[in-house]
Length: 187
Length: 266
Image (cartoon, rainbow over all chains, first blue to last red; front, side, top):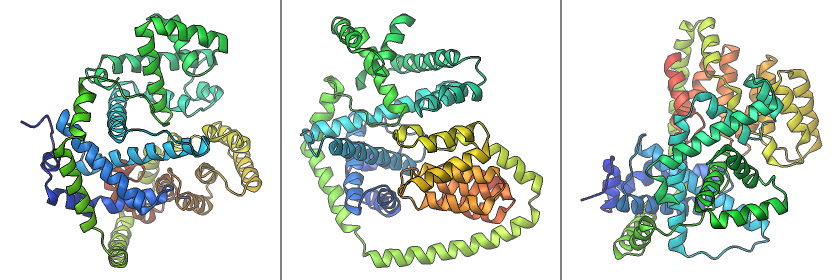
């Protein structure tokens, strides 16, 4: 029996259904290729990333199942986008290290990307459970908006009060993540 | 875990501990598995919220072993080959696909223009003002501070903007623009948003178009702000035109919001 996959397209992908793959190449790949080209990549980068994203999605669905709360197309696009973002970060890191890059086993690399995507989804789900104020506050704090701006925007009495609130919101988020059944698999 | 220890985790993760303190903390981590995993989680949260690379090591557990064994299986290799063969098959000549896109885009533009012109007749000024207030948020602007220490003028401009001191913000942005040949794309969004606050919509839209052309990761935000500028100026037809464009591209910034707003404008 197939693991929990709530979208028929994922089940089809698992069966290697060529029509489903063709449909993704016709409807989604051109958009993704355009996104990659606008974001420091080439057509070949887009092809490689798209292949890897589909393969990782299949592997994940096969082993653990994938549950999607949005449209299949939007979901696959997010997976592709995150994978390209990861690749760009990796390239930046290589530039900083004067072109020296870590040799990683390909399988290990695929697993790392699958786990990174799963963590991304888990953190997004848990962030959605926080209050809107907490979410906005964390967003501003991690976007390095200065404390004096945060204090004014969120009407805190002092910068220390703002820091305490950031601390509590992050702690709340950490608790939510830690208590989720999924997190243990990912660490 | 008590708040004092949590605070130390934050200091360690953010790099604000002294070298000596950090060494002591690392020693403590070696003997305290709970602390070690709390530090790892704190780092992962920071990676997520600051949109930087999550380079966590792959843990050894039942799940990751199962993943590895599937990836190396014959079944997985066959699926990989299927993916590759479909990729080869779907490589279409660029000219044909480009020409088709141009024709489709032109047809869509005509339909949208006609629809917008009719819609404009029924749109009240009060309605667009309310929708602008509901959908416009400065939270959609990107961060400027994490982009490097050389952007002091841009940062000052962003702070003046947040403090609603728009003339000063504009002056800082112009000074920053004059000081560099390759401005951070955030400049265009902030400058455009400032001009919009100063009711200079035409110039604001030009800035948002610069953001769109910047090929940056945040470039599609330019479309959203352009739609907002049209909406604020009362130009519903053009707002709808831009929103339609956003709603047709699932990866554009605020894709879902654009669809929702478009429905309200219809």
